[in-house]
Length: 540
Picture (tube, rainbow, N blue to C red):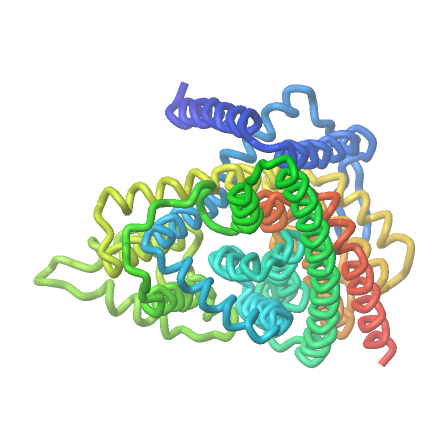
């Protein structure tokens, strides 16, 4: 038995233990989310017994019979997904560790208090909510780096919770906005960049169409969230008034009996406010190191902004997007520096990718370094730093595990793509494309939506659809590129195979059913608008 097999077995055992612990300690909604993930995989497993595997080439679909998911695979594949995609989980765990350190400084509480007080004092909560939505959509649309942008979610969520917004509104304004940015991607490399390279298009392909869709869908989404939020605030106020009346009546009865428990009422009020701190990194409030009433917040914001700028610069592929080779040349120059015959930087920076080629590994390292910088700036002791980081990471472990498990279906399909054996998704798409001759926006949109359930990574989705759309002319291919990447974004907003969506649902303790009831109208309107716009472009 070789080393690789032994490591796989050990990782599998650890994965089962972690999942078991999570199920045991998680709340009901988390178990429900785990059930949703399980049902998604079972749907895939059942379809594998019904739909034959197919390959598509030269405009012809060839099937080779079914390739069913067996009973052993039902156990092995979730473990394999956990092992393969655990790096996504580590990203979320380290985000939690970062915020655990930030909370130790007391700067997060101070910052959220100041910002929320500024807007609530003037009755401008809706403006901040709308600004949050637009900012996150813009950042996601321009960069396509949704995972690094998730770092901003706890920060904005903490402020929105201070403003007394409910969980579904905060989830929609933060995580939902990042996903909308994928739908209306303008220059995001992980979206538009993949489309450009795999479909041999230009980064400015249909840019005016994408900008129009960006404006329309951003306005639509902001209106939906703000309107729903106002209704939620009214419901919260009504509930608070009703609860207050009940407390006063109860208190009056106790006073009549000569029993006064006003202190208990005050404690209850404080507890009700405290329930809105779900966005913070740790379950229980950490003990703040600083005893000062005023903690400087500017250093924290500057450090976080610098971290994101470095992350964007390092993870955005400038060469394959715009042909910019500045970072390539800089990397070669730095690595070529020698002291005598010894390449000093090549040895010191061995294993670190050059700017433009950073992965989640480098991003994890960047967040850890950022945590250390924050600890130094705010003069945390080593024990306080470790305590805060571990507390934050521990809170985010369920989110990390769910994020890894969201790719259970992709693991099976990825293996099939690597082997070139075909998938039953090809058979489904072959049937759809066989319904019409040439480019049909609705068929392409439906195909991309269905494929989005199985392929939660646009790169693999495009790779699976390329053979079906290669026969289109240049004009149709240009439109198809916009349609596929945008519909993929919609799929990531509604399907439980979406890593970011599952992470958001887990972190904010929102059920998948509640989210679908909230988001289905926007998803439907966005899909119809996309197919309509692309249909009009086809006729021009």
